[in-house]
Length: 237
Ligand code: CA
Image (cartoon, rainbow, N blue to C red; front, side, top):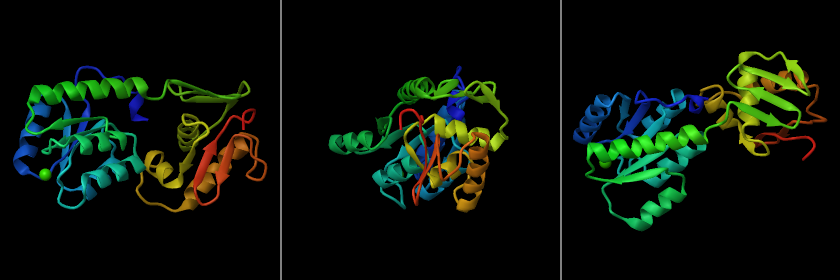
């Protein structure tokens, strides 16, 4: 739940995805000078692995990567993460940029861009993402989750949850009504790119027991076969 962190002056982690070593070096220098923690990779596949293993606060994505088309990378990124993405493109190609913004990019920069320009875009994207991130409290029906205190209760009664159960419940409750794919849960809650479904099933069944429901007669936690899990307000579903 990295997006709950308030962004102060700098010190956000930036993942630079760029195959041109000169551009890469320049970006790392400029961003580090502005107190960002910078990591960089040169291929789309490495970028996807980085985002899964240790999610950055923002990704700067070069569109001309050697292994995958920019739109393809963006789609795959969005499949695993909500991380803000700024596209860096050498092409002043308006239809393509519009397409990528619609496909989930947060902003774009046309190369060559100045350090000041990049810095301003970065600050704006980080401000937006910290505002639009989950609030510190989540309420769905009788379920109340306090993210700061890491406490949860159901109909006023406190729930005794393990760390993982809490994270799983909070992640689902922050997206009420939406079916969350198992792959997304693995990436966002377990921070793993791969894993077996049993891990999720076991935690779900513990969580169900604590919520006083079963898979056969669900109230809050609904398994959607072959797809994932949905948390919903029982009075509304
Ligand atoms: Ca390139």
